[in-house]
Length: 211
Picture 1 (cartoon, rainbow, N blue to C red):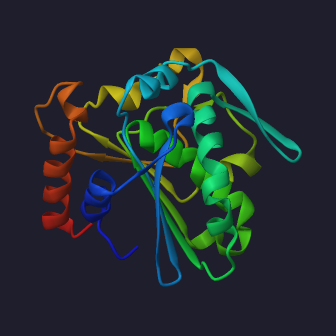
Picture 2: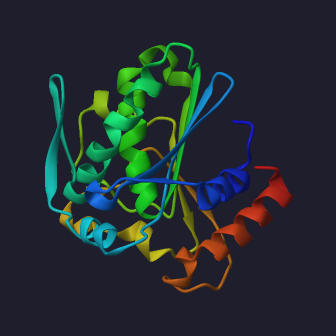
């Protein structure tokens, strides 16, 4: 990707999101040449929080593969999906960058799988990033499903509590790769999730390693 993780996170925080009435879903879509950006907003109201805590697993059916995900996040993604489907399917799109923070990171997980499933021709050029991402997938999907998340990265700052929810004891798990930032920082589990602390630690990472 052209952007560092810090630059992408700033875009996620500052994007002029489209707000849908159904399920209070929000998303941002833009084209930059052959690259499509799909960004998703953090929780911004009671409806978002209701969906965040509606976590019983629900089957997500794609062809012969049946796998299970967080019910509330799936409901929000299914509201957004028809609004972005045409752009994802556009053959002039050669690269897709997906990003979200907190609640939006969970939606980014589902969007990432959708893009890889529907655009296998550009799968090596689809990158997803979930900052402060909750667990979305329940139990262990088969290898075909898991392979769709090969280029998705969960970014966890320090001891971010949100990235540990829903608890693993309930069967939920992260997919893709985990990138930890904020090593040695003294934020608590709640303050680790604050956007300003993500910005601070991502800024340090960029200055040290250019990532």
